[in-house]
Image (cartoon, rainbow, N blue to C red; front, top):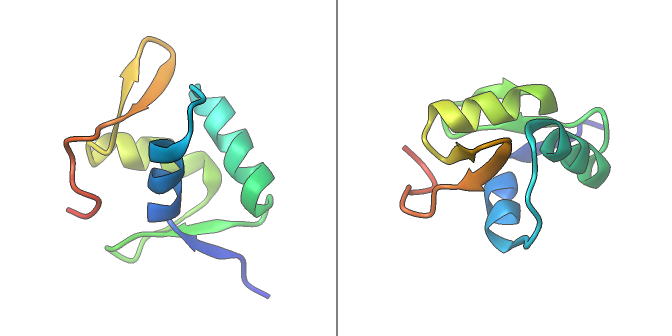
Length: 80
């Protein structure tokens, strides 16, 4: 069975969590939540492995870095 989750779920998780994450910490958390075999779909039909989601969300302006930590850009819409 395919383990495919939309990237919005990660954005919603970041909006709801009170935890701060580094790149590696977020990757570990999504693997814990969804499994090592998860792929993440996007509105543009990308299929990303967990190690690719941070760069994808950074490039889209969905998240930004605050030192070593990842922060959600709450001013950004969910989809481009």
